[in-house]
Length: 179
Image (cartoon, rainbow, N blue to C red; front, side):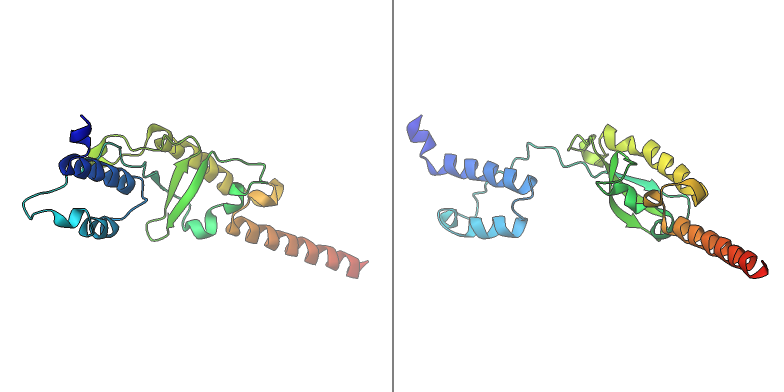
């Protein structure tokens, strides 16, 4: 057994499995693997020999892509709800925004970490469930901003709140001038 483990074939197979593991975990990229294999002891391989690369780990969960129906997320999404000090906890992380398609990309706080249905790279069930959480945030973003916590408002809601305050101020200053 020791003689087998010290053999060149066994070491090459182990190196292939190890490099595959590091690549799947994002530690190495394919160019780095090529440069590792170009150096000793792998550089002595004949052209017919290959190192089998076996992927034993499922790909990481891609998260969920969800439509945002209130228009541009940059204006209508309440980003401050993701602050650690926010009272409103959405239950997911906002990963990316596609303003052209009005979509947001989310990952659940309880993400399984790996995709399901490996060939299609579907998000895990926890990330798929963020659609319901996003709908709750949409409902909050639809509400008039008057009685809502300012730390949970979107840019659009903050603008409306400011307009309302300016109108109220102008109305109060007219009352003072008249009296």
